[in-house]
Length: 148
Image 1: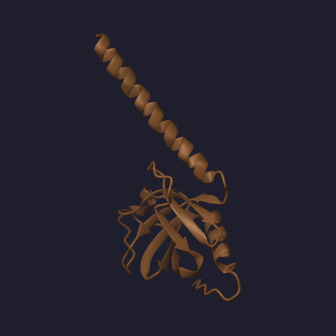
Image 2: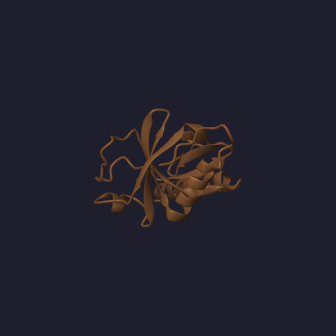
Image 3: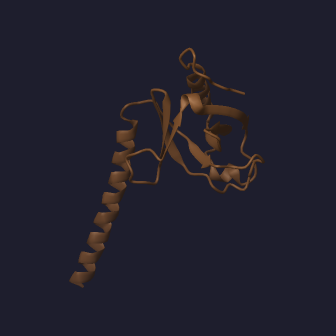
């Protein structure tokens, strides 16, 4: 009986510690500001896939001329993807369809981009999209920015 209670106590403590570390990591990422919720689908085909598969929920952070994208359900402090402003080309925008509506946040808008030859999709709120496009267009003079 004592062994079972000890094991249960250890499991509860480990789960609580894991949740605490998730929260702490997110606070550290958001500490410097300029963050927004952003789902990412990497290396997609030209034809929109509305199955809802391949989306990863994350947090994006502006850092100078880069967007750093972090997975939400990860303990890594380093960004999973880094997108340089001068290498991002916006190919289009659309609303979620079919299963995507269930896989993404309710107010999401999908932005199709090309980054260094890789086609990707970013899903974010309308407000975050406005900020993202303004950030793209605010590139220093001489930098190439393609916004469709």
